[in-house]
Structures are given as structure tokens and as C-alpha cells.
Length: 116
Length: 113
Image (cartoon, rainbow over all chains, first blue to last red):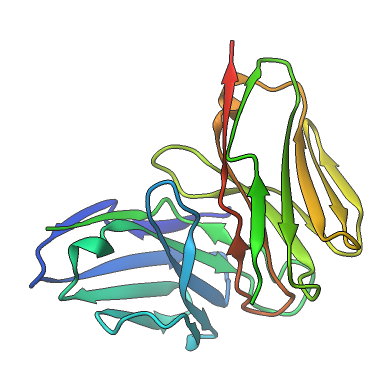
């Protein structure tokens, strides 16, 4: 099973709202990722967590706040977003331990976010 | 940082023909090269990958080749079917327990009947 589950599938929010995106995996992976994908563009890395610690932040604005409460769960807290933040937000996970499979990233179906 | 270029941006083939998508990368330290297929409304799905110690890998109708010297890698799909229609992304990364994937710009493949 290589399933990464993201909720909700769709989210509409106003610029003053606070919302959260959720990502879950039960593959025992120790690395989890948030990507942002605009229409007709490739995914762009936002954050990487390794063993529940933030290891990469690609200079993402502070209105996006990641959280990794445990090894199976990754959240992305959203506050005071702008319309240009509307995009597909993808979560991925990888084994995160040394070995031949360490790099392989499995993606969820994404949350399509619209900011009004 | 790594930069991955991908060509063509769109590709239309007839059912049963072959399709080839090419990528180049800039970071000589990159050693892992996956290919993802993304259908409308879905997340990217890994279809095949190759590591720098291998020159070619095949899985049924799909094959990937890697030329480390030229920093090129390519995806080959034979006997294309309508369900192969999707956007395909190549990517590159270094080894590491939590590595950044840098994606190419994507190729929209259309398989016509």
C-alpha cells in the first residue's frame, strides 16, 4: 500500500480565514513533504519534514505554517492567504531512512484551494 | 541549485505509436531520476525511476534511459494507449533521507485513436 491521504479535497476560504490541510500516511515513512502546484506547472517544494523535524523551508511566506505532530501526520495551517495562493497543495512521503528506497516519494491526490 | 529542462511540452501520438520525452539536468551530484504521470484532478503517480548507477530500466511498455555524461534522461512509452494520455513530469534529486525533488516543466501527452 503506497497511499497518502489528503483532506479536504477542496477548500474555499476568504483572505481573513484560518484553515488547515491534513495529510496522513501509514507506510512507516519518516520524511513528509508539502508541494504547491499551480495550473499547468510542475509541483514546487514548500517544506520537508524528516523524523518530525522541519528540515527544509523553501522560503515560504509565514502565512503558511507546517506542523508534523507525529510520524504519520502532516498539517499545513493557513492564515491570511492571498488570491494568488490558490493552487493544488500536494503532500508526499518517502521512506526517509538510509537505503535504496529512501528517495522514492509517493504523492497524495492533493487539496485544491481557492482563496477569495 | 538543480535545474531540469523537459521537452517537448506537448506531444500527440496515434494509438500504438511510441512516445519519447527528454529531460536534461544541471547538477552533476543528482543521482535519482523518477518519472511521474499526473492525470486530471489527481496527484502525481510514480511510473518508473532510475538511479545513476544504471543506464537503462524497463517495466513492460515503459523504459527510461540515462546518460550521466551528457546529463540527459528520457522516458520511452511503446504501444501507446488512450489511457496513457496525461501530463508526465521528470524529476531529479540527490541521495539523502529527505531530498528535494526538482521537477521538469511537464509534457502533455495526447494519445489519439
